[in-house]
Length: 288
Image (tube, rainbow, N blue to C red; front, side, top):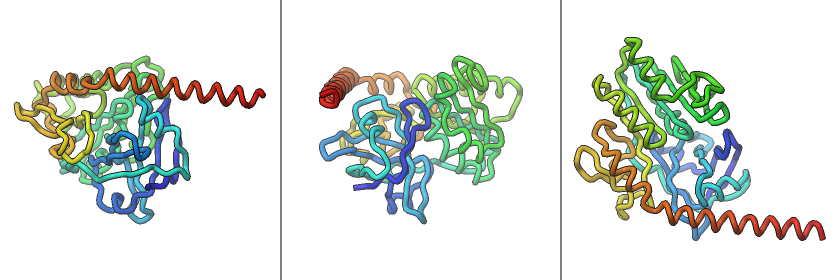
């Protein structure tokens, strides 16, 4: 079991955890992830390692409460224990001095873009970070990522903060201005990554995406995370999670990611009904 050292919300339904995991902290590299179970009968979910400290023996993970497991996780606090963590998993990001590198994080995808932007800066790149959210409160980790960025552009869909528009709009503005861009990393919702891939392809800009797909064991044995890249089947958990964006079949990826959507909705509905009943019983007991 892994003890939670710190837990705090950094956005709506988005919570940051520092968790004791000394062996993972010693070995992890940018781009890698862990598989987590909240309790012994829970499902396994992948979460990227946002940061770590090998001396103090902790890793940092960030979860957005959208399904049953992430909502359960986000109910936990410092001092609680996560049943188990496995990692670091996946291939580390390929980092080199590309020149000018743009790191793009959409929503909670910024949690994945953050450690990679840090590694890019440490390798001598001129790092431009574009981080987006629906509105100001959904823009996360701005202070943290700015420490490793030569330029940073927060964007919001509604214009409540920073640049008014999508992260793709800001990237297009930079490209149209004549800026020489050598590398783009894009992490976020699948439609966003697909849009960035289509934007950079005509310019021949090397573009990498981190794929979020269904993962069960994280070791390539279950086959649940199959994707098509360059016309070939890959297992995202062991062959990735990062791939050349211009070779990813996004249509197949979107279809696979929606495979268990009805079951996920049913599980979340049952969980929320159970929580409502428990709350009503508590209120009833306190009133009596």
